[in-house]
Image 1 (cartoon, rainbow, N blue to C red):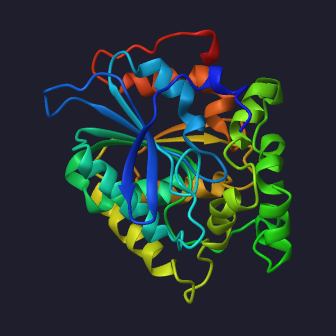
Image 2: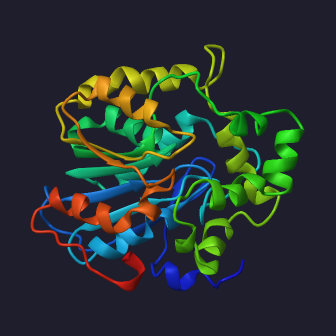
Length: 304
């Protein structure tokens, strides 16, 4: 694995054994004896990994605990070849991590598939969560799926493109941002570094295959369960932070979330794409800080 990205990712690794292998996660910042001390729990989507949240972790780790998992098959987690990689598996693994670390007073930051996974765990453990921050994501049933994603689901052709040629991860470096100048060589290398072989891209492909567009899909009922439990979280402070130029999780998905969370605080970034945390980090850090007691984001050259 090319290590040129390591300067962008200055963290120690931690691992949790789950069914299927070792789940990698970051655990940065102070471990307070106070059970009510705040925790940021950052949950990534596809084809990203904990690298996506690196600037959030650096900015807040001197003040609060920041936990950032890599889903099994992603990032620095194990990549078993005989694992099902269903939505229910990812939610279960996140639940296990939350309970193993006894995380409480959680502010959830979730992006892309991290929305369904993170909100799935929150719906099952609502007493542990205090705030939701959702970034270009979904956690409810929908038949909307761009043709660029649908092509990757086709038998044989999808496997060739996603796993054989790594086209899904590579294309995202161009298609998911409106600020390409921020994607330096080191950043681009960081995003694709864990997905350096056909075997290591298995979860990237399985995530695409696991989108439940119809009722007969194996993950359809799991997603329906996540959707049903959203109302149990509506009492929490919710912030919807959206890159409005996202061609995948378009503004339609933002408006759909407003039906579940009518009191949500909305932040629309008209000049940003799907990787909104990359495109608008300097505007997002104050939003995160505003909901944390006495927190002020650390400023570094990497956060500009």
